[in-house]
Amino acid sequence: FTGPLRSAPIAIALVEESGGYEFDTGRVAQNLMLAADAIGIASCPITLHREDAVATVLGLPEGARCRYAVALGYPAEDASPARFGGRKPIDEVAYRNRHGETV
Image 1 (cartoon, helix red, strand yellow):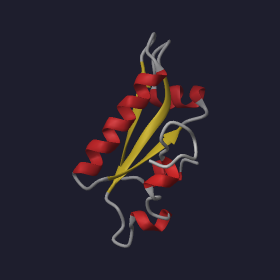
Image 2 (cartoon, one colour):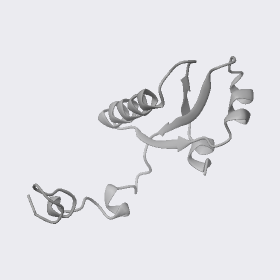
Image 3 (cartoon, helix red, strand yellow):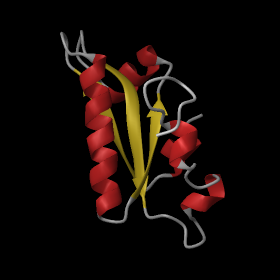
């Protein structure tokens, strides 16, 4: 599952320091991806399942871990959000008060 990471012109490894929180790492990834999109750069989040191997490759100190990375690059000319089916109508994903009650 690391194809996008291996073929990206640049990738950012999100290293969690000892005592850090995975929730915050997710927020960093989200903000990084939103900022990239704002300037026309495509991104892809990658989950790194082999933490020990990642720590070795990155030379991480004891207690630090890296479970996530973000691959960055310019989108292909023929890429479009519609290739993934586009956005769903709001009434298919948002409900009022109870599931199934449209907004």
